Length: 286
Image (tube, rainbow, N blue to C red; front, side):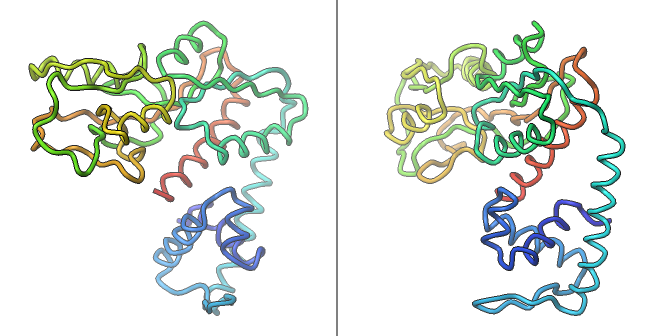
């Protein structure tokens, strides 16, 4: 069965006459668009485009699939429009952990709001513990963030390792007590990191209390501290410190979507689709 996201990318590449313009239209990176097309070709087992340095043309199989792709996407849009034909009105509070507050998701939410002029989306960015408290209080209707070692009922979007972030040129042994860069409570990464260090009998100190991912990265990039991070957040200049440093293993970071029990089911379903599609494209780009 074909993934609608891959078909949408395929159609956009052809309609926009290139990967770069397709990436702009879909709010993706060019490498993500290339990855989507590569996955689609792997599913079909045949090339769909003949590429040159200046252009690309559909193969015979590409032309056949294009006709089906347009029909599938059109039916998908028609079904969605028909089944969600409700007058969305009012305010919807959305809580985002900072690593989700990026342009692609915000543009997708803006596009959604543009389809329903009666709806107002208010976004709040904070640490997951704070956002979940606001969800319980009724101030937010949806929250997207990551937790560790949880049985919380939120929809699992994906999971990945939580690691100790440090510098590639770090030399063992690490300083004692271990200098940490952490978010304030109630941060799930903070709680699990401190718990694992205590269980391992490793002394630590909070060398830097951070309020943003930028500050957390600066602390680690400067060598001022190490920090618990999801592996996808390491980025250039950082690495996961291995077992040779004597640090305890950290659990998986679980990225989840939480919704309020009294939120409008139709609005929640529509926004969930937007967020899940964003997460699918984000994971493809990693």
